[in-house]
Each structure stands twice: as C-alpha cells, then as structure tokens.
Length: 217
Length: 255
Image 1: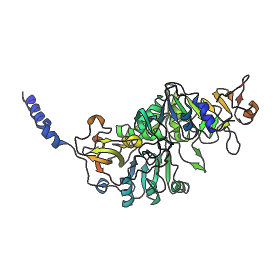
Image 2 (image 1 turned 180 degrees about the vertical axis):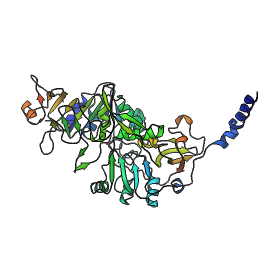
Image 3 (image 1 turned 60 degrees about the vertical axis):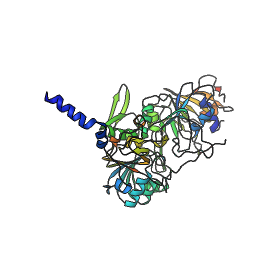
C-alpha cells in the first residue's frame, strides 16, 4: 500500500518532457518533488504563474508570490506571471497538458466530485470545475477509501459533481486505474496489495484483464 | 482647400509636445476617502486579490470606516477572520458574496450556514471571465466549466463542435477596487508577481474603477512597454499606505 508520497511518486511517472502541468492542492502538490530531473516540465498555478519553483528558503518569502494553495513559492528562470483570465485561457484553451487533482469521489463513467458536502462543507470549487471541464488529460490523486473505510470509486457519485465524464486515470494508495466505457480498468496494483483487496475497496465496476502488474515506485 | 488647412492647424495645436502634456487626463485623487466618494449602501463592488495576495487593503479599510451596508462583493475569496474581506463580514456589511473559494474563514461559514449571508459560488475561470467580459463589453459568453453540475442550473446550455457549454453573463458592478504595485497619474498600472491575479480583469469592469498603488510615480516614469493596464480602464488612482501584505501560508524549505 502507498502513502501520499508514494501516490505522488507514481503520478510523477506520468509527466512527460515538455508538459505544462497544473497541480491541485494536497497530494498533487507533492508530485513536483518526484518529477525526473532529465525532463523539462513547467508547473502552472492558476492564481497566475507558469514556471513555479520550490518553497523559498526561510527569510526569502514574498507576500506577492504564492501558489493556488496560498503557500509562499519561488519562480524559476523563465517563469511568467499573468492575470486570472489569462490563466484560465491557458486552462480552458487546452494549453495545459496535464491536470492532477484530488477528489472525494470518482464514478466509473468519469464523473468527479470534490467541492461540496451538502450541510457539512462548502468551501467552493475554486478552479476545479474549469480544470476538469477543459483538460484533455486529468489524473486524480486520492486515497482509495474515505476515513470511514467506504470506497471513493463509485458507480455514481453521491456528492454534487465538479465535472461529468472527465477523469481518465486514477492513482490511489492501492492501484492505478483507467476510466473506460465499461468501468474502472485495473492497470497496476500497489506493492503488496492483491487484486482481491482492490476489488473489495472498489464499489464501481472493476475490470481485471489477465495478470495485473505491481507498480514500480 | 479649407479642410487640409484646418486639419494641420488642429494637428499643430493638439499634438505639439507641450500641449500633449497639458492634455493628459489625470486620475490622481488625494486619498482613499476621495477615492471612495459616491460609495453607497446596497452597491455591488469588485475587489481584486487571490487569498490575501494583492487585495486592495486601503479600500477595504475605508469601506469598514464608512460602514456601508447590504453590499454585494465580487471577489475570488472572502479573506480570513481578521483581515481582508473578513473585516467587512465581521461588521455584517456584506449581504452577498460572489466567490470561487471561501475556505479559511470561520465567520464566513457561520454567516452562510445561518442564512445571514447570501453566497454565489462560481468557478474561478468563470469568475475571471465574467469580469473580463464586463471590461470588454461582452454581455455573456459560453464556457464548459460547470456543465452537468449545479452551477449550470437555470442557465442556457448549448453544444459547439460536440462539446457542451453553459451561458454565463458578464458582471455588473458599481465600483472596482484594485491594487497595483506601481501606477501613474494617467491611471496606468503595473502589478507584481502573483499579486496581479484578478486585479487587471476588474479594471474597467465596473462603473468606477479605483486603483490603489504601492508607488504612485510621476507621469513619464513608467515605461509604456511595461504597462499591464492602460489608464483608460481606471477612473481614480491614489497612493496607498500602511500595507500589511499578510501571508496566509508561510511555507519555507531548509537551505
């Protein structure tokens, strides 16, 4: 079974040379730490920076330089700043190649819910609805089950939707799955996790074809 | 040949260097109080900023001092409990918030859940574009964001090239309050880092745009090549003061 860093490490393998990548808050933010050094990638933060660098060293924080999670960051050589409308022109216009975000629920038809729990939590969707509605390549990073042990990979989402039919790939602490027309196709197992365990933790339709490889992380 | 003659007279009169300077439209006001003249109860305001980054701190303080009530605020976030728009929430001055993300604010959550505060949650890219549409004179636009979700409820849906979109209308607001790094008397603005965010999109998107700047410089000091927002989108500009520029999530690494 993977921890959050393990999930980020596995997703980092999906990042290819020349990609512009938008990372959501939480596990997705960790992906930046594991991208191979021999490829060129630029991270976009929707509040208005391309070429986002690591956190600043102590004492060099700049209140005018933050990421979408409101954390202080740095800008790498070649970075650029822009306004919010331009930022979402990059996203809506499909200029950002890969979007990695967290989710509360994903359905077997690719629907995603991650912005609201009626009566409990209403923080807002931020940029998530724009991202999922436009991105061609969306990877969801999340735990396979919630704190109560219930599956987050469902037949249909029970929470208010963020987007419909948009998720392509999911990396959890247990598995890598692809959303297909017939359901969740199991691509890889996390180290030490059996297909049976994944089946038991997946409420939506799980498709298992032949031998399922163990992830290399 | 009367026409060419008149044309050249006009040309010489208005376009000689000395007269150009005299013709510069000046937007400078003395202070925040003058900048906010005309602000009334029940108005709709746009406020720039992302989190606490690039928020118009002086305008917010003045709105608190004026005590205007029943206002609608269009702003990506709602500040934190004791800073930014949180100050206006604390005084119960806000009737309605239009935002994309409103975490980090307990008083906000309390007022929303108790029904004291009306909240319209809007996808962030749609929020930015509703500002830009107002600035650019578009009444509405189609976006895929929110299609198939509760955001789309009651909105026109239309298919383009096999993909579904919803119709979103431009904002209409009485005042835009924006904050820039540098500005000049002509109202030209330059922003810094990610403090740019929604500020440029909100310029010229309301009846009156008020820009507060960290540094108000004399005309001619800003390089026209470097200006982010031309002064035509700004009605009033003033030298801001006492910027706190609070950091919400101070995150650092070891050397």
